[in-house]
Amino acid sequence: MSFLKKSPWVLHYAATSCNGCDIELLACLTPTYDVERFGIVNTGNPKHADIFLVTGSVNEESRKVVENLYAQMPDPKVVVAIGACALSGGIFRDAYNVYGGIDKVIPVDVYVPGCAARPESIIDGIVKALDILEERAKERKRQRKVVPA
Amino acid sequence: MSNTTIIPFGPQHPVLPEPIHLDLELDDERVVQALPSIGYVHRGLELLAERHDFIEMANVAERICGICSFIHGQGYCQAIEQLMGVEAPPRAVYLRTVWGEISRIQSHILWLGLSADALGFESLFQHSWRIREMLVDIIEETTGGRVIFGVCKVGGIRKDVNDETLRSVRRRIGEIRSAFDEIANIFRQDATVKKRTVGVGVLSAEDAHALGAVGPVLRGSGIARDMRQLGYAAFGDLDWEPVVEQAGDCYARCIVRVREVDQSFDLITQCLDRMPAGEISVSVKGKRPTGEAMFRLEQPRGEVCYYFSANGQKNLERFRVRTPTFANIAPLVHMLKGCELADVPVIVLTIDPCVSCNER
Image 1 (cartoon, rainbow over the protein chains, first blue to last red):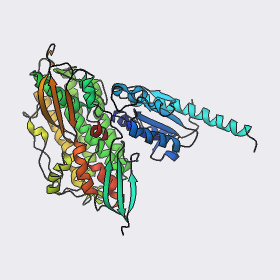
Image 2 (image 1 turned 90 degrees about the vertical axis):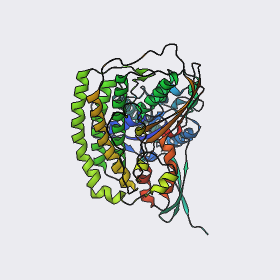
Image 3 (image 1 turned 90 degrees about the horizontal axis):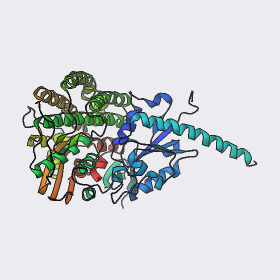
Image 4 (image 1 turned 180 degrees about the horizontal axis):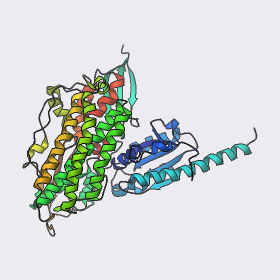
């Protein structure tokens, strides 16, 4: 990919995370990594977001919030699960209040491993998500053409 | 007839990296009362002590929270060592102290950045995190991790740091200190910071004491209580005094943290000067913890209490943690009464909420 077709806005939610991946995610936005230079902006509003970044596994309380935020995001949208807990529950998979990975609740497109996931791998995950996002936007356009006005 | 509105704050909110929910009852723009509800990050970590043996559990304890990770690991290992009657070698104790203080500085600078962001001072946020990244480099070089250090184990530490690296750490700590002084002056003097924080969210010394505040919240209200005074790890040998501010408002809590960063730089330098040589761990093979004990440590956010109960088995009988954020929620609710809606994010941030610690 030589240039970005779109400036993706990301929404971040810490589902049942220990904070480690959230800190690394915030570190991506700050001068050393600075993803904002590519137009990637962290927004607090799900209606503005293209990419949903979730850290941590899910429990009963956070399940509702994750589902809600996902439902509020406009199509096309991509979900990136960040960190070992978001993938499978990680070190907490045996804990009684942990359901497991994010994919138990919402469909996940990109999995970023690590405990805690490093900023480089998080950026890599977002770049992968961008391709998927573009693919989905094209798909939507195609579908619109098929349906007669 | 009451004429109040209820506004939900959280769990997903731009100023909060973590989910906490507050129901704010408002009369016009004034907060009448705030009702916190928690549980978004509860994992049931304490019960894992029954599934993992006490040596593995050190890794789980470190993941109670990603910001104060090392200090949780340190507290767990110190407590188990005491229950087993094992003493960690002096070099391990000093290195633990150094790592603990580095993690305190990075936590405080991280918080200063987030609070600047809550004030709408975006460039100060970016500069704070730029300086924090220099510390994270030191952490990565000496331990191998950026967030989760993974170097603390029962009986000592996993990894030694050679003298050459320690000298370079010492030099770089000096550089980071002068870089931090620049932003510290902004927090101390800038009109924007003062306008938003002076006189906001006042907590008097009596209230702080009665409501059980801990850490910088307590010290910002004029009570000099710091668990490092207990002299665990190397703190008994070092020369330092708790930082205290009198005003009890958001500004005072901010300044406490700025001064504590300076103090921690001092403590690290002292430790590096006195760094003993020798072994870094002792074998704990065949030993099992027995008995019941309670331990207190000072985290970046305040006092953390651990309760242990063991019966000589390989699993602990009970492991319980009371974290500083939990103790600071009652003072927070008190501070929010009577403040304006626009000040809520700033006040919530000044207790430095660490929700994953709080709920485990």
